[in-house]
Length: 282
Ligand code: C2E
Ligand code: MG
Ligand code: MG
Ligand code: MG
Image 1 (cartoon, helix red, strand yellow):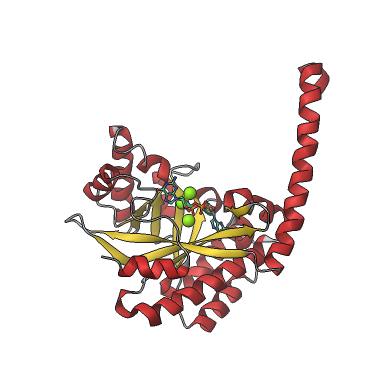
Image 2: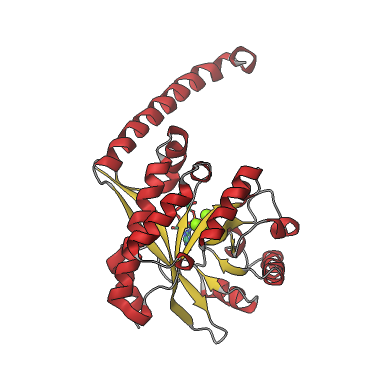
């Protein structure tokens, strides 16, 4: 293949591959020790209630997002290590760490903030975690230890993942039977569509940032949001608009009747203490 493609490309391509593989192996080894040494931590982005009068409900919920405090590189985001964690089998341990930390922080907010505490905690699940036969037992045990109600937890799965085989569907049904809420993350980016939404046992549809970010300048994208909200609502599902960055986008989201919104317009992801302060700010 390299020869057919031409010598010049061979020379450039192979070292790049080797470098990439070495880098990947390096990250994997580092990630393994990061978990043991407590370098992973969680931040929380508010998920606000979108009210018809333009106000927001700051206590609607939060989404937990994992971060890595790397000793040399500073804070590293999940885009750079979740895939490696999935491929190396580290994702189960990382996922469990995130769920445990998030449930602990959520419980602490209930004490600290009382009636103004976030009402829902969203935690992302990866494909590999859904294949773990002990997932439900782990979730149940962590909920129990934190004193949270199962319905206060929302587990987020992506479209491609939710559309997969019978084993995944069964796992989702088991989680639902526990009483936890399920959300379909990044809706619109995968291969499933509005016509297959009814096949998924989810309570909430999260409309991907790519639609929201174009919705204030492209009528087409506003129409897609409108259609998603209508279909979701007819199926008894609620909607969240992801990645709201401008007031104009917030106006579209409100006009189209999304129940909740999330994005830098309201807040970036914050450490637990800063999240509590954000809720209390006026
Ligand atoms: P996601 O679940 O769709 O989370 C939303 C992502 O969008 C977050 O990126 C968040 O910081 C970012 N975001 C929120 N509002 C805005 C906005 O207004 N503008 C822009 N440009 N971005 C915004 P983050 O934290 O880098 O996470 C990326 C993805 O990594 C997440 O997407 C999720 O799929 C995955 N992820 C994060 N934490 C975990 C975790 O604990 N476990 C697993 N399995 N995946 C995780
Ligand atoms: Mg998510
Ligand atoms: Mg998302
Ligand atoms: Mg996303």
